[in-house]
Structures are given as C-alpha cells and as structure tokens.
Image (cartoon, rainbow, N blue to C red; front, side, top):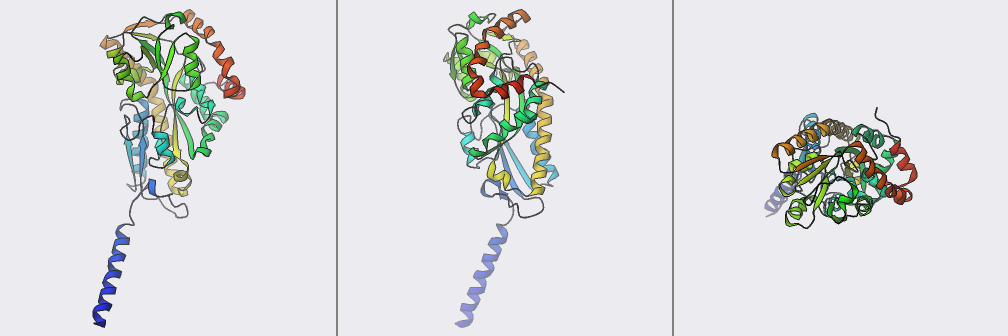
Length: 349
C-alpha cells in the first residue's frame, strides 16, 4: 500500500512537470507584460488591428512591419494583422488596446482628439501642403510630444502613418465654392475641428464609423463625405456618389500607430529593439506608398466613371482657405498656439 501511494505521488509530480513544460512555450502578448528582466527575443503573438482595406498604405505598412518582425525574430514572434475592422472597429479598438486585447492599432488621428485636442492638427484647413511637411512635424519635437501624450491613457504613440489630403464627394451637386456645401449632410471621421470646418461652410457634419460609411451614403443618411483617393477607391464609394471635387485639400487623413503601455514597457531590450525596427520598416513602407496608392486610386475612380470629377483652381481653393480662417481662430487656444505654429512652420526635408 505504501509503495502504491508513493508511486501515485511520483506519477502526479511527473504529470505536473510535463504540463508546465508544455505550457511554457509561446505567449500571447495580451497575457504577458513581456518579461523585461530576461534576455533574448521573447516568444509571443502580437495582434495589429485596423479598419481599412488591404490595398491601402496603412495595411501594407502593417504587413511590412509584421513580416519584418517575424523574419528577424526567426519565427519566435508571430504577428497577426486584422484589416477591415475584422478584430475591432472604430468604436472598440481604443478600449481593447487599453485592455491589451490587441497590441497595435492605427486609428485616424481625429479619433484621438478627446484625449488630446492637438490630434486635431490634420483636420486644420490647409495646414500642410505635402506629405513631407506632415512627416517633418510628426517626426519633430512637438509632434513627438503629442504622440507621447497618451501615457495617462495606458497608450503610447509611436509613429505617424499618412494617407494624405482629403477629397470631397457627394450626391447633390459639384462642389466649386463654399456656398455649394450649404445644407449638405457630410460624414466626418470625428473631432471638433473637422465638424466645425463643415459648420463654417454651412454643412451639417455627422460622425460615423468608417465601416458604416458605404451604407450611410447608399441610404441617404448623409449626402457626402471626405476621404483620400485610396479610401474612396478601395471602398468603392463612387458607386453611391455622383460628384467628387479634387485639389480641395482642406484637411488630411493621418494615422497614429499606437501600442499598449504595459505591453511596450514590459518588453526586454532585445525584443523591443527588434519590434521598433519593424515599426520603422513599416513606417517607411506606409509613407513611400501613400502617394502612389492615392494616385492609383484616383486613376481607378476616373476609369470607373461613376463620379463627375471637378478640380478646384488655385483661385477657387484660396476662397475656401479664406472662408475657413475662423476655424484657426476658434481652436488656437484649445489645440495650442505653439503646436499650430510648429505645424505651420514644418518644412519638408
């Protein structure tokens, strides 16, 4: 009886050792702080979530980042990329980033203005004349301060990824003057500045998630929307719109690459260095493709022929610029005069 009892205890001990060994492999990043007290590349699975289509600068940047990390970690780190809101949508992605249910999200900066009004910068009318000027600001001291300002929300901002200047579409009439927007219902991504921009032009802004935009246009919930060529093309918004005005450029779509604070600070130095290199690689890819994919998107829009294209002249654009000056006056204190000054003085390198 004694030997049977002893044998049973040994058997239980062996089972426990086997179980612990089997469970000690790759970790889901959501269940681990990363173990920054250990050396070597940490085994884990990382999730990246975003809400746009695959043929966009954002998705291609995310895929470049994922492939770089997987390859250079020798497969120790698995990276799963979820486009089109497959994992979390506009409404839930920030909440789930805070909870570390996803390790990276790439939201439109207008979604972050409730945490820091300085994220309204891309929505200010005609703030940057090129992608390069936007990069100069967000990579500079003031832009980095804005990105790093979310740590109280358990979020760390890492990089700005571009999409580019917005064009305006609608089903009612061609937009040639500020008066042409009077009475139109326009979907906006979010943020006080973008809403006020359209109110200043006499339109009614309505905030809607990107995933609901096509249906809202199709059903007439809104008359129009503003977006980049690549987003308009990949989501086939021309199928439910009649007019597009280009060279409008009164606002931009720019994204913030965000991560969970506990996840990021819990990485050991080697792992963080590798992931940072992947982020830099993805950022370079997203930025290099932004202009190219927007031009390809515009070409497809013209080829489909669903929308009448109107290009604003420089004189017509200047009228919009003058009409929208009050937007700056209204939000200067809220955003910060120093932040706006740094943005307007940013120059392409």
